[in-house]
Every structure is written in structure tokens, then in C-alpha cells.
Image (cartoon, rainbow over all chains, first blue to last red; front, top):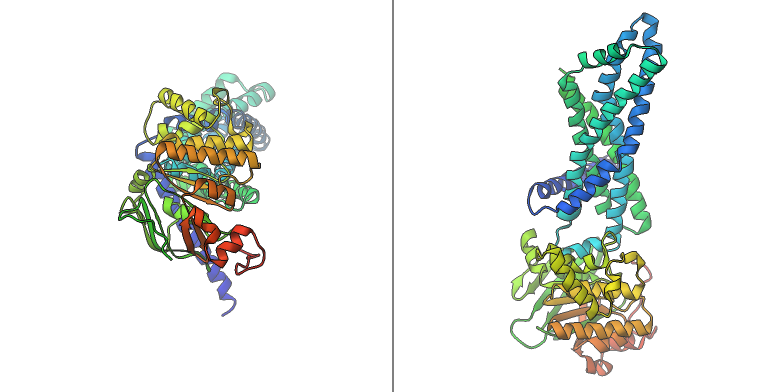
Length: 257
Length: 262
């Protein structure tokens, strides 16, 4: 059946890529948990992912919190539920918006940078040079990025939680005339530990995925500048899709029952 | 064709090496021996598999078939940790220098000392500066980044990095490509001097016959996936091999037909 052949080829190609990615991830994780470690590289990546992403994540969080408060007000005021705004803002930010938006912003900023850097190292034989200097590229390049991504995105999301709630507070109090004490009380009263924890778990997973996609596509890039460009695009697109897919999976695991 | 040097245990022994990429056969039963302290140059046209051969020896590529022994130890299919141990015997000068963009010049040179030998950075820096001086570079370049260096300086830094760990075997991949003739000769002199000082075994690949004549004890020609001629450097002009004659004289006419497509 000629019509089935392309479908079969597509499925095989998908399975091949999934298998390669799984093996790459396994190898990366194995090296990330086994000494020797490269503390200088890990520190450098933590600063790059955590510290330098703060402005973009902070800006995203504050405007998201502000928009959320404004939209909730215009919607909820139709059935006199304005008092729920604080709860809606804090739950939306901590459970969903902070981890997902921070993940997507970091995917654009860090995933692309990782793919470009490692891809350039690949096409200029710098990765081969690492091997000739008895340094495992997975241990030196991939493991520090996986560790830093997994640890730093939860930190960023924690900051985004605070800034996002602050954004909602600013609009609610200074624009919509809410009582500050009541707004803060409503925020705290309805916030449960699981709301924060689920968001931070998501952030950890998203950080790992962003780093994994950046490293995987960079490491396997070929063909010079065009190949590096392609790797960068693939890293951002695949990380973004995986973030959205895993967001559903983790949400279902935490709150699906 | 006897491609081996005399002696029972060569530093590197390659037998019946096969490597292909898809349908393209690159190495097809290659045999080669490198004696201890010997400098061998492999010549051959573009795309004949010279770099692939080096990468197979270093474990960067896995051959489909054949044997590669280093000091009598089989290295094809070695596990990762064992491979790292064997690779400590090697140094390599890459065609494009392959310096790490994110590290300063001295950190590039000291990389193998710090990462592979576990040396403290302060001590490694002193050795790096010595090696830079050995290749004619002063301490003023040590804090520069590779992007600030000229092509010739990059090659010198890469050479300093290749010899920093005092390897037993050094590979030179097209060491003079892209350099002007004078800088090319400077690099040739440095290679000869460094290999002599270290007493290392050297394997170089090049198209540059002047370079080959200067740095080689023995020259081998790779064609059709095999070594088709090997002999002492001073015999290459009288090899009696049409392929070698065509190559060393750079003639378009002859038994070698250049492939237009890979």
C-alpha cells in the first residue's frame, strides 16, 4: 500500500528520534550524578540561567499578574465575585503561569544559546578537542547545563511567583481600589503548599527539558552555520512543545484525581 | 605493500580498518604501523579518509571492522573510562585549531593539565606559559581570548595545547593549511622541535608536500581506502608509484580521478 509507506517511515523516524533523545538524556543524567563534577562550569551555567534570566522572567511575571487581576476583575464583577481576584491571581500564577511562562521565556533565551554554543563547538571540532584532552563532553558540557537548568528554573519561578502576585496586588489595590490587607489575607488564606510545590516541580522538569533540548540539538548539529541555526530553532521549538505537553502531564498527576 | 616499520610492537598498529558512512566507503582494509618516536605523514587527496583515520584512532568514530592497537592494547570498542585513559597518551593539533572560545589562551593550553591530570590551576598556568613560550608566544597573549588571535597564533596556541600534557603520540591534522608560506614553515619547525623534544610519536595528515618532507621520517599515501605506498621521506620522489607521482607533482592528469561529489 503506497499510502501507508510514508506513514510508516514517519513513525519509524519519530521512534528513532525518541530513542536517540532518551539515550542522550540517560547519558546526560548518568554523568550529572556521577563524579567528577565541574563546579566552575555548573556555577557559570547557574549564573547564566538563573541570574541573567531574572529580568526577562520578572517582567513576564509582573505584567502577567497585572493582566490577570484586570481581566479577573472585569469578568468577575459581572456576578459580584470580585473578592475572588486575589485567589485567582495567586493560584493561576503559582500553579500554571509562572512555571509555564518562565519555562517558555528560558527556552527562548537559554535553550537557543545552549544549542548555538554547543552546535558551534561541534562544527568547529571543539567537542572532538575535548575528547582528545581526555574530557568527556557529556560531563563537561551536558551535565553542568542539565544540573543548572533543573536547579535554577525553580528559583526563577519562586521569584516569578512573588513578582506575579505583586503585579496583581498593584492593580487590585492602586487601580481597582481593593483594601491592601484584605487582598493579602485572601492571597494567603487560599494558597496551599501543593500549589507552590506543583509549580516548583513543573519548573524543575521544564528546566531539565530546556537544557536537554538545547544540549541535544547543539550536540547533534552538523553542516556549519546553517546547521547551527537549525539546531537553535529546533531546540526552542521542541523545548516549548515539551513544556506544554509535560505541563498537562504534571498537572494531571497533581490535580487530576 | 609493507606499510609497517620494523620492530615487533609498534606504538600504534592498525590492521584491516574499515569505515563507511552510509553507502560511501572511506576506509577499506587500511593497515599502518607507527613506530615509537617515529614521525609519519599521511598524504592523500581531499575526502580520502585521512581525518577519518585519525578520528578512528582517537575513538571519535567507531570503525565497522578492523583492529587498532596502542602500545599493544586493542582500543576499538573500549568502554568510555578506558578510552579516556588511553586518550591521555594522545595530543592533537586540529586543522582549525579548535580552541575553546569561552576560555582564555592560557586556560586553553592548561585545559588538559587541569581536567585530565587534575593539576591546580596556578601550577597549570606556569606550565601553560612555558609551552606558549616554546611555540614563540609571550605571556602577553595568555589572557587574550582565541577570537583575538590571528590564524598563525591560533595554530601556535593549539600546538602548545597539544604538547602541554607531554603526550606520547601527537596527531597533526593539516597543520599548515590556511597559513602563509612563512608561517607554515614556522609551524613545521615548531612541530619538528616539539616532537623531538618530547620524543613523541607523530602522525600528521597534510596535502602540503613541503610540510610533509620537513616533518616526516616516513610518508604514506592513502588512496581508495588503503595505504597504497609507504616509505622513507627521501624515497618518495622515486616511489615508482604512478598515484604517488601524480599527487606529489600536483598533476591533473594521471590515475587519480578527483571526485566532484562526496
